[in-house]
Image (cartoon, rainbow, N blue to C red):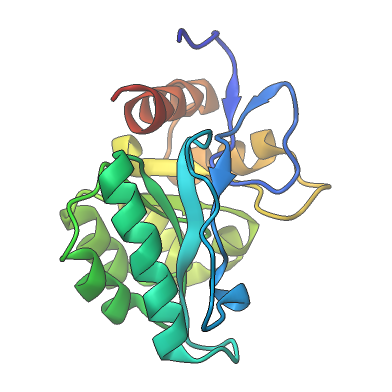
Length: 196
């Protein structure tokens, strides 16, 4: 699959647009974790998720972890990347991920510290930044230190947000031309999703 020039990549959105390249996802969000769960059919998705751990939301941590591990096992078996939702659970998430050797891991909506960003990047994971990321001073520092080959942009669930706005803001923080960043996001998408 060849990517068109000047196409914008939105790695995580709930409002896909035909002019923007976004992966097909399937998964059970940690907010929806229950004791009994049935994973979706992952055959037609590009990325498994979003999945992960949210230790602020009122869902039992043990149930979340079982669901998270089920997603990771499927990702490993099917050789697919995962998109993670992680809230106040960075260290437990990293420890669990160490047990799996996955094709790719994307921390979506990253709002962590420079130290957390460094830890995730050291392991070869991707960081995706969106509207909330840009409002956080500590995360702006994390954006600045994230290599462009480990970076994504996203609109998540804001239907009013244009991905070009996010890309422009990230490019400015990284002292890059927006066009250069767009090309790098295409390469990252191809590396993560298309190349098998």
